[in-house]
Image (cartoon, one colour):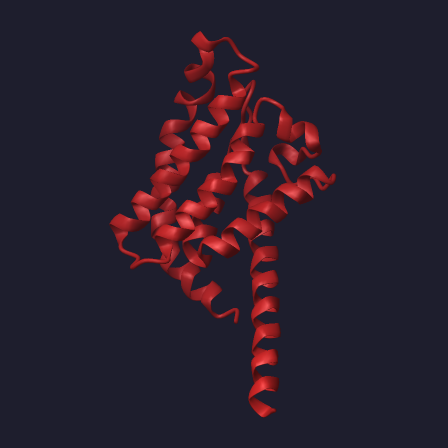
Length: 184
């Protein structure tokens, strides 16, 4: 009887920790989305930095849950996307593919983080995740801009910033991992 009660309490604590981390992750995404440099079709934001730190620090399940919650919050009308935007049209517009790309990127980065974290593995994980976000974003953006302009509008302006964000995430992960691992 005592073991069953302990198991039930541990399960409840585990579920509450998951929910708490997912809420924290979606909050980090909402804040990082407001760090923006506006461009005509797709703004440069801090979202991929936030995404990479969340996924590397919390793992695939929590990171994917955080991103799903973040997308749901925005779709339901909370101003959590870049420049305070929100709504289903944000997910269906020119920059929506980048937002959708956060889901598989969070999962993939998180999976890599569940192995041994080294500088190289963190850098590779951030690079893979960023590539997934770019690919997803370019696919949807291709419906809004001529194909000959696609890379100059949807990729090239983001490459240097993407690399900088990967490096920043690589440097921030050890501290973030220690912090988030305390939530149990």
